[in-house]
Image 1 (cartoon, rainbow, N blue to C red):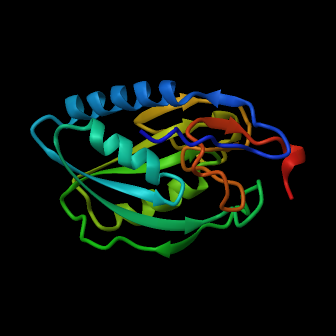
Image 2 (cartoon, one colour):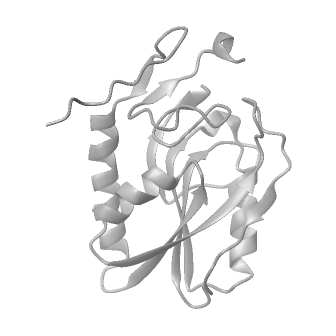
Length: 186
């Protein structure tokens, strides 16, 4: 059996905010909640690339009802730690969503600008229902009045990396959610 991959961070190891075990347990709970809410129905998970890809994968495996997925991609961060505030659609849905139950899956509900933009866009396609699942919620940063129906964890205003979340496209592969030290930015 191969040795587990050791993830290192230089110049210092980032502090773990949420462990991989806590994430796994919470994702199972969210899957059970979705199963209860949509019992007997099917759902299309729409993941927001790239940050939500790992969360969507784990969430899909935790859901027992019929489930498919699609992806959208938007940009609001670029390569920094602060959102530009301008949301730009980079990749649209591949399949029609009219009349379908949709769960928009996002890594972080932060200012709410991205999710508000995406909800408005998706509602134009007349889904049967549209809900939001966010792994992390940063309510202190909210600029738009939006809430997620499914929230993994509420966190303070830290820039985080790992479990799909990045800094300049790096650190997505960290298995825990870690605080990115402000002095570590290039």
